[in-house]
Image (cartoon, rainbow, N blue to C red; front, side):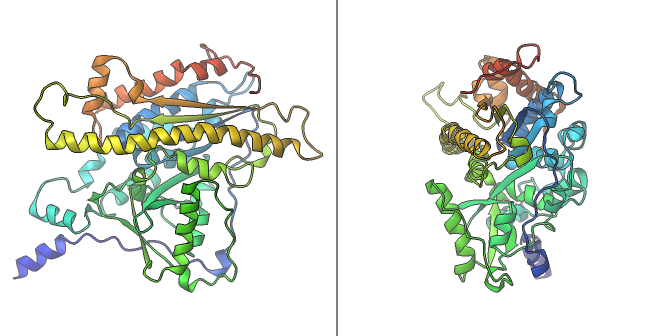
Length: 445
């Protein structure tokens, strides 16, 4: 009997809420203290989901930016010009680290994450207890990966630490299971559940964004909205898209639905695996978001770089009449569902980038203090993807790197090299910065 009770207890994964209520004294919306960029170029990054595969691929992209001089006569690089970084799941691990530590922390990311084995902190064995834990909601809870992230990468940092850090604006999200909608880890979302943003652990936000269903139990947030001390709520700007309206309606439900006492958050890749929908939401906030006003007034170019390590095409399933087996079928089916949404998201980003540029120009040229060349602004979307690899041997190797949180050293080197190589070979990137890194003048489009 005692053995059965012990087994039952071990097989009951549970994440307790780690968010605090919003008090009257903390109800104001603070702005980030990240300094205005002074250059003529701003970079906005989006890192896809895909576990450590995405983190290593994105790390190659960031490292290439760190080697590119921002302009002649300064010590700045393009990595210093990153104004915002969006990420989800594995890409969110890198995005959060860069947002917290900035370019100076790039070397530490490889040492503290890519060269480590976070899976050693997880329950990965197929045992009766783990199978039961999975059936009851998730094999692993925050005492595993969440605690590992905090110990090795974020060292007690909270979401409030980001505004006081050395990096750009972070755009990170998870999936709200009740609403089947994105939950962005930003002040507006925490205000919607009447919760304190500043004190929420960064490691828990990243763990939620990376919480693959069944492998991880949902990260839990308590909804304090029904008893919120705030007397007036900030009205949301009506969204132009169906998704934007869905997110707004989801936030309204936090206040109106009696059964929505606790938010259950899982992998953000379920609703936005490229992090581009979250980026577009930020671009649709009051202009010049997600840029800071001081920088946006004199920029000449904005480069949106999407590093997509999730798209994987091919495999051995079509070589014979037989098969595929269960694992290949599940993997290809999940890839198909996610990839279709990702491609649609890229099309949306291209379209929204043009509209955003028009709004930025109207904002820059609308005041009496408008600069002479206020309408001179180039906005370019650069897409980098593992799906674009053409070499047969490299394609086969990519297909072997399924979702996991730990990689071998040679796998890190391989993906790092692909990210760096794809950025440097990209036609739009070379148009802007040239083959040897000299910045070229680009006419407004």
